[in-house]
Amino acid sequence: MAAFSDRTTFDPAPPAAPVLVLGATGTTGSRLVGELRRTGAVVRAASRTPRPTADPGVVPVRFSWEKRDTWTPALTGAGAVYVLPPLLSVAPEEPVLAFVAAARALGVARVVVLTGSPIAAGDPGLGRVHEALAAGPSGWTVLRPTWFAQNLVDPAHHLGAAVAAGRDLVTATGSGRVAFVDAADIAAVAARALLDERPHDTDHLITGPRALAYDEVARVLSDATGLGIRHLVVAESEAAEAMARSGMAPEYAAVLAAMETAIAAGAEDRVTDTVLRTAGRPPRDLAAVVADALGTDPPTVAPAAAEAVGANAPAGTVAR
Image (cartoon, rainbow, N blue to C red; front, side, top):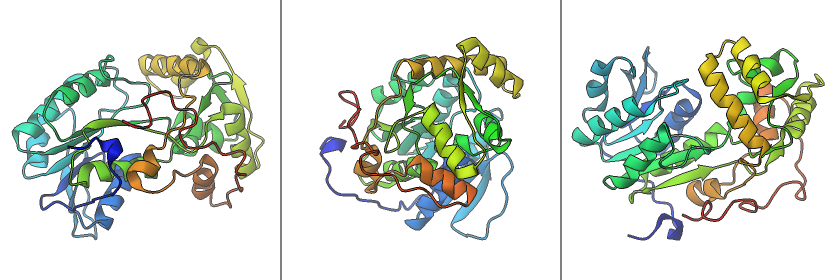
């Protein structure tokens, strides 16, 4: 079978069996449901509190990571599954590995798992899931998106809440840069991984089109809101304390603050061509995502300001 990076055509093929989407009402899941339905795929939309929909092609099902008796009814008869791991968990690998094993035992042929760009195969937590999938049967994909653009405009996120209140962004990122990615672009890549005739059998590092320092992010938000938002750089411990004050569990706040320190050191300063190469469309810029969320007109990004796709990607992250 040709390597995924050698493929030159897109071959979405709606499966006869439904696609199970965990977290179907969430940031990526809700967008993925739309992507799948546009291809004609039948979707099982899994959530803790499923609700009827007007679309007969979307079947709500109950699912909870904590209630394992919901797993088998959701999985039985599905042909593919999108796995959103337990949120705000510092040790998600055990339930995810158990769920993947249950899916395989029930005949689910395609498994797509969402992790994150800082997590490599073999790392603690979801890196163990990545490692296990790569060592197992064909039909797997790991999605490793960088930080979501929606975090900056969603009041449920600590940064989005600060923006909504007109407060400054407080981070430990220093001058480090991040190529914020639109959740819709993640969903587009996920749909291809779930529906393409040939399994991807790889991980996809997913970024937006340009890497921005948080000072630049603050300017984008200020231009869109007119609120004069600034970026305040603090120590990692102060960033963790600020997140904990927002209501985040202290242990998870510590993990995120450490990730911000990694950003300051350049860990996320990269741009890949994954969205274009996999979904066949260019990724959306942060300014456009913010403008959509706020109902404003996005500014024009000059060609000189937008980075060439893949220009900052380390070896091995663009073509896999």
